[in-house]
Length: 525
Image 1 (cartoon, rainbow, N blue to C red):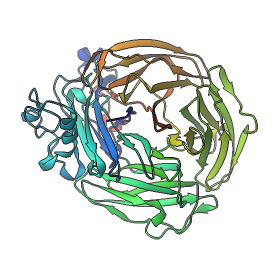
Image 2 (image 1 turned 90 degrees about the horizontal axis):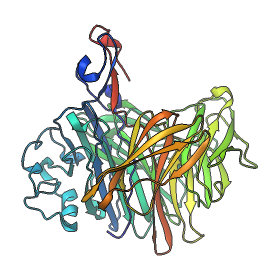
Image 3 (image 1 turned 180 degrees about the vertical axis):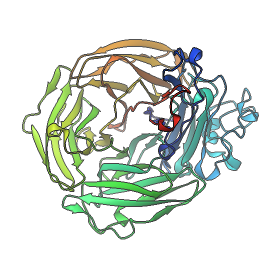
Image 4 (image 1 turned 180 degrees about the horizontal axis):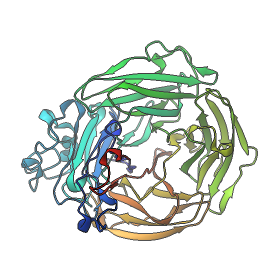
């Protein structure tokens, strides 16, 4: 495949069944290093991820990647399997069968040579529920490839030693047509509500909201659209049924007659749960995935705007009727600064606001920090970033991100073209970054970095010694914080600077479990 590929982590796990699922056993005080009567922090033992259908283009080349970091205290058994949504079977089927034999590829074909053709076959040969991708051991990523429009949406489960911090990613290169460029997205947990500021129903854009249902019963979803003057009238946005174990792409421009450049999409699940992501494709400036913004908040951080960004467009939305004047600051390598002419931005309640911030970073790493007065008005936000000269530009999106509380991972990295950007907008922090073994060989490497308060740094991330294939980058917070991070993958094709950016949310691979003497009915995360 003639490209460089990177990926972000989003293995969000939670105990609440409505937001994915995770499970833990009753804690062993000695194994957990905790005294009796105290809460123990233990690895989760089961979790799930969903990956949207990558592309409808026959020119698409997609890489799926899966990885779990080594976690102290995790079970010594388990599986992590991604299957086509339409062909999903029981989570532990094939777990100890022929799919794990030495010399077989991720699809279970016997005696595969694991060459390029074999890898591509792995992503297609999933009839009967055979895995598209299956991990063999923690600490070592695996990858499979698929060409054209046949790559499926995936549903995955991980348990035992693979559950804590499990991450999956898909990265697609499209060489021509609407949306050409790199399109990357981390597979995510199912949930019941999502916000996507930065979508569009304009004629130059082809934006889809991809809904993936992992369960055995149908999900019912409402899609609300908000433009510059408030909520848009929609024709079929209510009561959309997503069949069991299936994926449903919905073209946003078919939901409303309004043609608007900047739209906020609100997805609300009436029954069941889904995974959701917006695929935003442009006729002239390529395209990328737009992940969901962090939950509405009076303080937002949008990490890792590329240093060579030619244009940055902020799209923000506040639910409800209250207006807000957002304070705008840029966390640069030297500290927090206020962009000239954009000190505050007025956002009307219930209306999508868009603001052109120009060449915001001016050759240096940067992250946007947005603050409402007293944090009293909740906001969602994302930026659309352009790189390259006019006529040869490519676009990507960075939504408001959640902080890395303990650990996060970005997948499918390569020795060249990877940028890891880290910001600590409130206080300094020390982080540890580990490069895993490669998918085809290499020795892990680890480095430690100090991030100064109020700054953003593009760190020189480690690369596995003797790297073959792609690798994972795991970021762990050792002290200080909060810390936010993103990973950019960049490559040049035909003079066009292809790139994709993904924020790194915490992998939520650990959970506090009360001692048996405590009331387990209040356990939640």
